[in-house]
Image 1 (cartoon, rainbow, N blue to C red):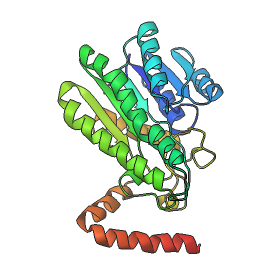
Image 2 (spheres, rainbow, N blue to C red; image 1 turned 30 degrees about the vertical axis):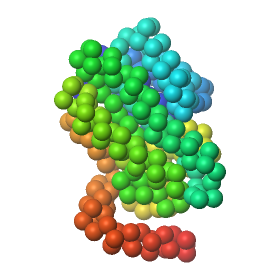
Image 3 (cartoon, rainbow, N blue to C red; image 1 turned 180 degrees about the vertical axis):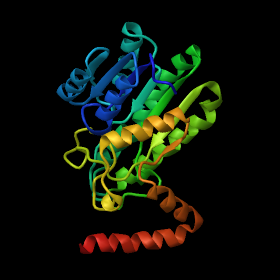
Image 4 (cartoon, rainbow, N blue to C red; image 1 turned 180 degrees about the horizontal axis):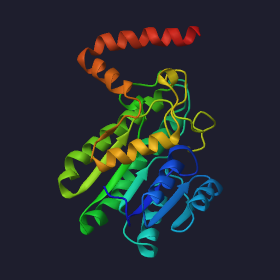
Length: 264
């Protein structure tokens, strides 16, 4: 995917990975970058940093209709969307103790937002001959997130949905990559404010906390190579292979890891 003269939309662009990606897209020659975030002021700040060619909009990615409306507005006023980065997300610890509404909200933001974006942009991309989706999941989508059941489940679903898109649309000019980092220096460790990136818990930070700009560069490299998985922490591939080769052993190891985390 060549970024020159492209129109890109980035959700969760108010900070972290989303902001870094929006800035990098502009630096690489994108004609227009639409920065969206639940916090309109943060999105506007990112657009201001980019300057000409950037615009900002408030967006709750948990609202499918809002995503549809945004895409229609962009395509009517700016042009056909070439790249849609479905990146916004948040953290919330808990499991069976959480209300069903908490699980549903996380599924809306981490999974159904990707579905809504794909529904909104893929038909137009197909008519124009192609396009690219970059979906932020997490290493938790390939492995797990011990302290958050809905985070683990929603991120697994995000990876599965991206796989489905790749299989069913990859030969029609639709590229897709799914970002699965461990800890990244973002705001996601705070309140549920729809920020971007991987989890910053002790589980994820053992292999280092990456800067958003490093992760953004890894995403752009993967997009240029049409590579599905974006793994800025290379250790994740090794863990994923171990999980696939002996699932029961992996589960046993994760229980020991859980106990170790709780003891610290």
